[in-house]
Amino acid sequence: MNNNMNKDYKAQKERRKTREVMVGNIGIGGDNPVRAQTMTNTDTLDIAATVKQIIECAEAGAELVRVTAQTKRHARAIGEIKKALDKQGYDIPVIADIHFLPEAAFEALKYADKVRLNPGNLFDSPNTEKELSEEEYEKELKRVEESLTPFIQELKKFKKPIRIGANHGSLSGRILSKYGDTPEGMVESAMEYLRIFKKNDFNDIVVAMKASNPLVMIEANRLLVREMDKENMDYPVHLGVTESGSGEDGRAKSIIGIGTLLLEGIGDTVRVSLTESPAKEIPVCYSILQATRRRVTKTEFISCPSCGRTLFNIEKVADKIKKELGHLKGVTIAVMGCIVNGIGEMGDADFGYVGGKPGMINLYYKKELIKRDVPEDEAIKELIKLIKDKGMWEEKLKIKNYE
Ligand code: SF4
Image (cartoon, rainbow, N blue to C red; front, side):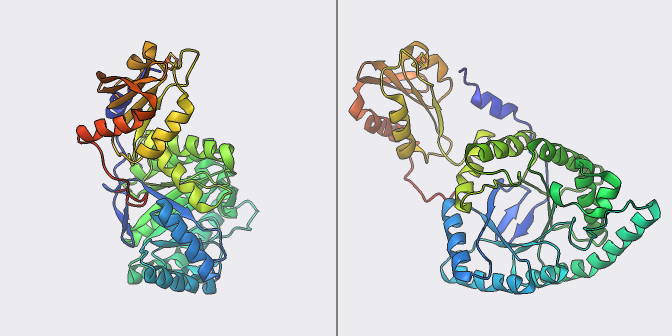
């Protein structure tokens, strides 16, 4: 339980340098914090339900939200959704998620703040199962370029950014015929699109490689970054593990996939996909960002697991402290069951709440004992007072005011 958190933070791998891509009023990449986003699961044509869900997500701290636009009608509905959000004072960017229908993509860019394209099934040939000769492959790719170019002109006209999001489960037949169902195939699928966009001098692009297997997702993203670097592409990267399920298992997959890459310096925006209501994905996004030190938005807690020496109900107390003091961005608080190991283990926490003797708590500031034998029922109040005395207290803000 040695805590070298601050040291680790300083030794942390630098975040990969990317360009800033503006999505509505929110910047992704560049010097912007790693953004938290989610996706609605309502019918986009049900404007009221979709708006309600987007507001729930925004209140939970989502900075961008994606909605599905499977037809032109759905794409147009995004215009209505944005108007309704605006009326209620929400300016969260809305992204259109497009598969299969190019006309939905053309329509969406009139209304949405960004359009997500799946290179596996848009402007390409998802059903081509047969093996292609080199010549046939190139011919197909040329056809993709011809279909994509007018869309790029429209993007420029409407000044909208895009995300190129390749999914392991929906690669085009053309890509599958050459690379198979592999991270290489995912990366090449996106790279082919990126080259076409770059050639047309369009660079407001975010890229994503998603898979339900975190290992595939991690490998694909590492490879993507290597390939983009080779071709001088500094596009921001969107991280996510798809179809990860729900509950602990779903969270574990996202934490492994997204967390590993963030630690390596890869990632400019994250989405945790859970088979739960979208607003529930947001606290997980922020916890991963906090744990990887890519974005500190709340109090950092250190607490011991408790053992036979524990002098108070640490689970209950730690929960209570978290509820009352969880909003102190950049402050580290240690809650330790006893002084035997507690003081050493709390390392470089700013404040320590440590069991001194039964019913009595000792309060520390930077390892220095400030108050001894505070009765347990007054200890949280005293801790807050100590934090205020040291000028590190702030009043609770709504979670969405994370900046
Ligand atoms: S009660 Fe003391 S010894 Fe036991 S886990 Fe907590 S800090 Fe360590």
